Image (tube, rainbow, N blue to C red; front, side, top):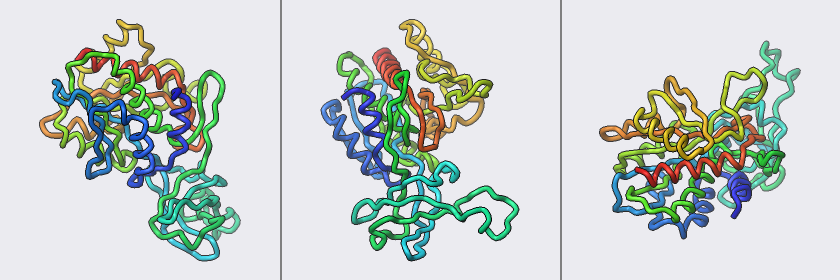
Length: 332
């Protein structure tokens, strides 16, 4: 499957934090022949082992979950109140189609908000989740409190080999891991590798942390997305289509960072460098702390319009990320 098709397939899937099973099954079906062993742990993480007796032992992580919402109250007449799961900006969800995943199957709806002139004279006209509701179009009787909600958006291909859609944070990272697993079959490597497709990053990262502890890894590469510059003068210097960003900062092991940078430079793999002066905002913040510490590297894929229905990612950046991962693993 082409990388572009893989990205579109993963984007269409529905898996907010804590409800990732649909995505895990799809990824498992794709990587089944590329792993020596596949397992799903107690936290719902999908773990693929390669050369399990090898040393050193490295974990390569990509979180599977997306931002979303849950039904918090049923109001009758086809309406449901919702609460956010992860960092949802309600303004980007207004007037969007959504999917409610019920025990009896998916139900479609649209997300509305109380008009400003009906909000009781509040000074602020900014919409918030207290004002938002889902109008269920059919199957309202199947909807229960606690059912997860995701955007119902189809990805589209754009110019310059880019794709727009939902949940590329972090399905782009998942696609990079899938590609890396496929490429790694051509390499001889002494390292034992575990590819971890982890849960719950958008709500604090327990999936990656618990799997890193159980697996007893010595090294970790966290693959996630980062903010690409979206307009002239934007603070971010990370550009779409210029390769993945290698993080530098307290959440990254300096020796491991220099090792990755040297490989990228020597092999002329397109890459960028991103300063991470504090917490990285990725699973690295948790993984590096397990047991007696893990040598951790953060590799991020540039992404425009993160946490919106129209995130934009470069197919080439995803493929370049996969190549960088494989070259690092083969040299450990």
